[in-house]
Image (cartoon, helix red, strand yellow):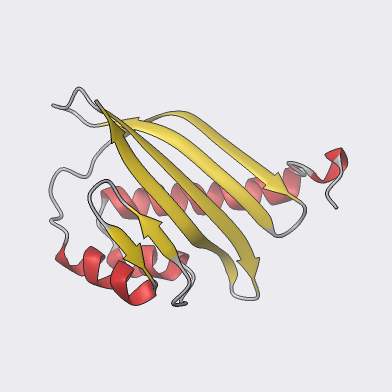
Length: 128
């Protein structure tokens, strides 16, 4: 059971925040190797996107390989990162892209494995 003292412990929050912004940098620069490294390499990993549902790391890899590299820049707003204990975190953010009036939403569940923090589930959606 998690108690209040285990939520957002400064050292854990710093680790997850660094991993989240590493992911963001890789996303906007289309660094597929880093994006792949930050997802859990498992068939149970899920990424529900704005226009696709990806089940398993192989689906996620195929999507990344086929995705156009243009127009990935975005601006984040209302980013919230919450850690629970030493090994679990949820990251949520809103984003906008130049030339679009739509607001995007992204949520990721991160888990610490022996190899480091990895995304085990992600959701991306767009609001009208």
